Amino acid sequence: MFDQSPFHCRVEWGRRGARDAADRGDLVIVVDVLSFSSTVVTALNYGAIIYPYPPNLNGKDFAGKIGAQYILGRSEAAKLGIPTLSPVSFNQAHENKKYVLTSLNGAFCTWIASKVPALLIGSLLNASSVARVANQLSTQANVNITVIPCGEQWNDVRANEDTLRPSIEDYLGAGAILAELEGSKSPEAELCTAAFTHANQKISDLIWDCGSGRELREKGFAEDVRHCSQLNIFQTVPLLKKDHFEDVR
Image (cartoon, rainbow, N blue to C red; front, side, top):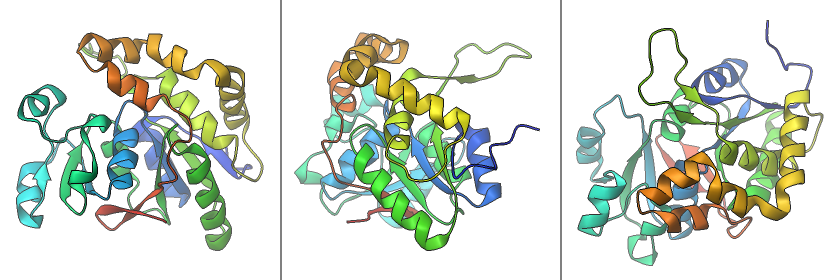
């Protein structure tokens, strides 16, 4: 059976990885660089209140019940000039306002792992800060750490095919965090760390030209790709508290 249990720091992909980490009772760091994690970090940096919600449930009804705005898709929201899954759509004007944010990957993984001892949101934007908080919380609670690169979903999936599309931006984001986590690392975590260390000086170029980056750029969201590729520009660390994120600071 696939198992990284001898090690303090592990890395697992996507929704299945989130479920396994939750079953073990690990501290979980969800990494979805383009763009759920980057959007949550950026929004909280400006004081917004973010409620993660899976796309298979009725997020609009939930938003209505809590007095929040349901975040629309990028293109639709951009036309209306309102916040969206695009991290650069958030600014100081959104302080203390509530938003329900859904996504196929980051929000879904968050939902699946929501009952763990602590769930943090990590990205390139806050890699060092989230690692520092994870080290502290892990020591306090005496639990292991699993970093979850969420990946993307394939379109036009056929019978007997997997839906998960591993993505280099999430792998590099996970590696940036793992590089600063304390304790023993599984071989999978060591390799993820090495990928980040090797690519550290050209991360922005790699993400700009990777499949996910090109997909966003072709849809007109090049600024999202630039923003999400920046390393350690925020100290914001989102921690899930019941149904919304709070900045640990």
